[in-house]
Every structure is written in C-alpha cells, then in structure tokens.
Image 1 (cartoon, rainbow over the protein chains, first blue to last red):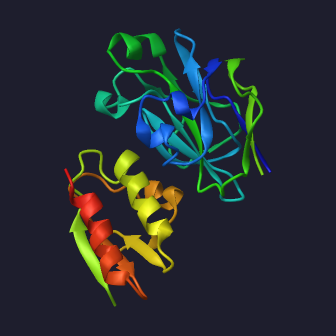
Image 2 (image 1 turned 180 degrees about the horizontal axis):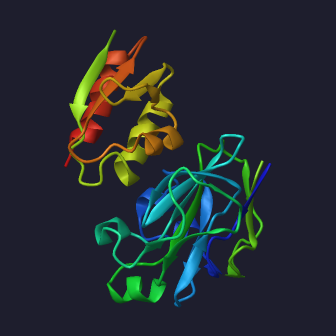
Length: 149
Length: 85
C-alpha cells in the first residue's frame, strides 16, 4: 500500500472540480486535486521514490514498487514554459515523501488567468484501489491525502 | 509485424490529453501494444506511466507496434490520436 501525501497546502476539491476534462473525467487516472493556498510555497514529493520526470509545471515520482504519482501544478501551465517555477530537485534524484521539489506562487498563476489547482494522480492504478484520506476541505502540505492499495 | 511510424503533431507532445487518450485506447484492446522512439526500447502503450516517461515531444517520431487480431485497426486509431495538432 502506498500513502500519498498532499504536495501543497490548500483545500481538497477532488478531480471532478479540475477545469480540464483530461483530469476531471479520470483519463489520466484516479486521485484527487487540491486548490492551493494563494501564497508562494514549495510543492512536495507525495511519496518516497525517484523523480522519473520533472517539468516545471508537473512531475512524476516513482516508488521502489514501480508505482508512479503525478503532481500537476495548475492547469494549462505547460504554456508558461517554466516561468514562475523554480526547480528544487532534479530528474533522476531520489527524494523522500515531503521533500520540496518545485517552488511556485499559485496567486501568480491565477493572476495570469490560469487555474492553480493541483491534480495528484495515481498512474496506472487499478479501479477501486485508491481511497481518500481527505475527501474535501483544508489540508496542510505533507498531510496524508489518499491511500493506494 | 504490424507497426506504424508516426510524427507526434500535438503541441504538448505525447503528454496530457493526447497521452491519456492514447493509453485509454490502447488499454481497451485485448492485444499487446508497444511504443518506442525510433531505435529505442519499446514500452507498453497501456501504461500512462511508461508513456509519460518516454517523454515524446512535439514533432518527434514514435513507432507503435501491435500483434494479433485487430492490430491494424488499433494502430490506425492510435496513429490518428497523435497525428492531430
């Protein structure tokens, strides 16, 4: 079982609230989403593992068991081409759950006309294996977010 | 050996929506499907993790391979997904 931590502080809103059907329809996979607090902050690794892919706006961490978790920082933020994001780790690096990976400012993303909401997705998870620890409401960065059986 | 070499035309490469649609389509098929960069090691087309790790960018080529009943039709469908800008 994998315990997935909240990468950012904010309010848990669920994938259905993400303004991008690729996430809200669960096409990427099951999980949840956090509407982040509008203050500059560091986005954390949700699990222990290796940073498989690190983009400024999104990253995937893979645990020793091969399970990957995607953290996406805002919607359509690929268009920013890294502007407003600062990498605090590097691709291929081993990280602990709770370790900072990217620094950003959700307020600035929103001011630029994009949603800063953060989907956190269990990649290739079988149906019914993901259960919420926090279904809705406030969460602190590093709190337990969901369980992946 | 049915396979297709196609250029990924989507602006975001084989990420986000194209990646998710690609994997969903492949996962529905009862046969094995792989994707590789030309000359590279093939990965399962049914795994979003593998596809994101492959990190195919806009304008890059991929080789999609499938074996078994309905392989040609599936390859056409998959090729069409990535050929859309």
